[in-house]
Length: 157
Image (cartoon, rainbow, N blue to C red; front, side, top):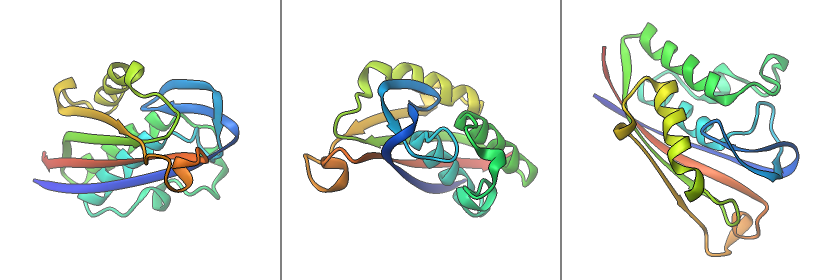
């Protein structure tokens, strides 16, 4: 077994509505990003790739490449799972924390878990989704953006 850690953050802007784990959670807020700006999926991908020693999100899905413009980040999760399979690994568990001052995660927690579990091809019980704020400290506390951190456990296939 191996463990990986992932992190992603996006500032609020005017490109894409806020999605977490593929779920539209706030239509009134927009993030700036090349893909759909889903910080939850991006953190999970980073954690998976890191656990397998395969690098990071930007190595495979660079923001400079137009093919990733607007892509659903759940597709990136599925692609990362495939990359793991190619080198003999499978996801076993993901623990995700979303950090945001105003975006509400709790009403969408179950849908986020279902989406991620499906993309990862693991049981719902093996996906944890939590949320926190920074208590008004820093850029997230000033509601300038949001972030996510993920830990992924993988095992040999």
